[in-house]
Length: 147
Image (cartoon, rainbow, N blue to C red):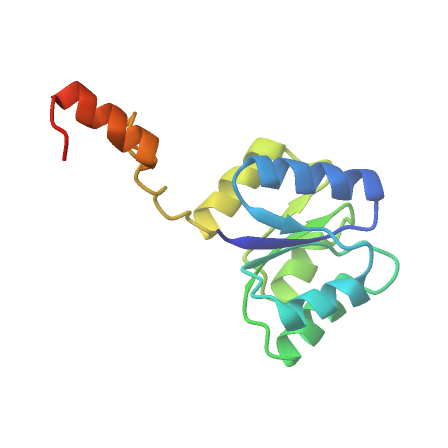
C-alpha cells in the first residue's frame, strides 16, 4: 500500500484530506507540523507528499528542498491558496499543484495517476477461506469420505 504524507496547517483540512485518501485506499499520516513530517520522511518510505505551501510554520518550498537534501525522492503534490502557486510548483519541480479550494475528485484522480495501486490480492473461494478441523470434518461428511 502506498504511503502519503499530508502536510497541511489547517487541522480541519488535514483531517479531511487524510480521511479521503484513506478511503481511497492509501496509507496516510497527517502530522501537525513540518518538523513532525520531516521526522516521518526520515523513518518511513513516503511515496507522495501532499503539501500545503501556504502553511505558516515554514515555507513549503523550503521544506521540499530540505526533504530532498536529506535523501527523500518521492513525489510531491502541492496545494496552495497563494496566487503565485504555479511559479512555486515550477521552482521546486513538483509533479503538479492544485489551487484551493480544491476539487477532491480531481485530487484523487491525479494522485491515482501518480501512484497506481497494485492489483488487489486474489480472493479466496467462498467456503474455503479457512481450513480448521471442523471445516475439514464437514467437508468429509459432505463428500462421504472418512479420511
